[in-house]
Length: 133
Image (cartoon, rainbow, N blue to C red; front, top):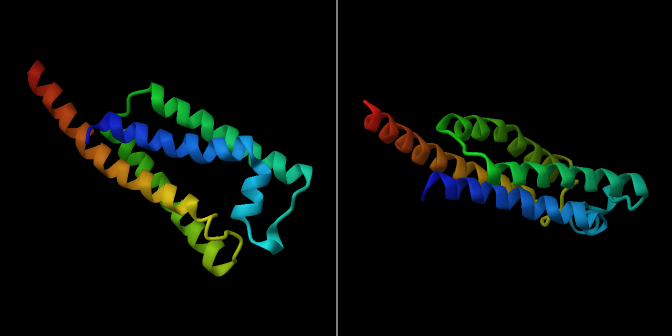
């Protein structure tokens, strides 16, 4: 798998889940949050839509820039706290439903893509350096 494909996979997670939150925030609230934490008021829908808009924006950026091996490595490290978030808000404080754990699935997909992308980009960078040496 190429680094570019890994980047597109990361973008797809952001665009898919972010687009869902942006375009259908009430649907996300209904399916992803447990009953005690569900609020269908304007502020909650607005916050979920804002979250979705930021995710879509990052997904678009992930499509248009070229990531280096360092970018994949940094993004993999940045994802780590999100696994703690998913665990805590599903198992310790049950805010996220099983469908809400799509966030975990997305994070895991992106983490694996980061590892594969890091390796592919590192090889690409080494090969590019050899051409100029």
